Image 1 (cartoon, rainbow, N blue to C red):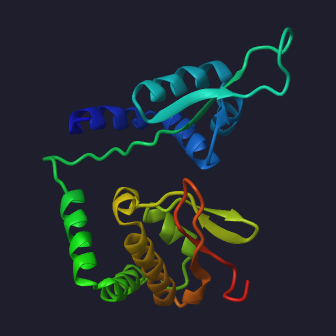
Image 2: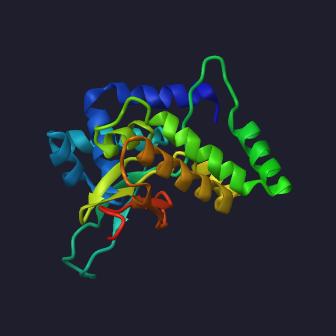
Amino acid sequence: MSSDDDLQALGLLHDPVRRSLYEAVTAGGGDVGRGEAAEAAGVSRTLAGHHLDKLVEAGLLESGFRPQDRKGPGSGRPAKVYRRAKGERTVSLPPRDYATPASVLADVVELLGAEEQAEQAARRAGARLAKGRSGEPVDRVLRERGYEPYDEGGALRLRNCPFHLLSQEQPLLVCSMNLALCQGLLEGMGEDPGRARLDPRPGECCVSLSKTNED
């Protein structure tokens, strides 16, 4: 898909209703019904359905049907649900390609056996991201970096991996660097770096943050 197509698709999110509905679906972390999204966005089901289907047409969301508990006559129509689309959208004017050199550099790290040095560099990068952010909520900084943190039992899980495409090619390297980056970020913010640990879950980031190092 071209950058122009991506630009048109992302332009749909300029509308505040569509933006709210998109955020309601992505925050759900799975299949979200029309009624749930409408309630979260504060609009009617009919209006929500119209805008949600527009987002599906643009490739920003995917749709399906929730399995019914009861089958046969009288069971009613299956409920339509929405989820975040698996593809990624990037817009750059003029077009830029950062994924290819990132993939090349990851291959070089593997060929040289420089995984430990890469982790150290990632930890330093995390510390740089934390500069001037001491005392701020960690989830705020992670949200700004695209991790989409959410609370689960007092711990922070990360719904999105900002390095998803590269992690498909080099999962061990990218996940270890991601962990080191998060640990460096925590340390730079005056937090316990041991809170960040590898805790992969399908469809989410491989890192989560516990409440304390002992949890």
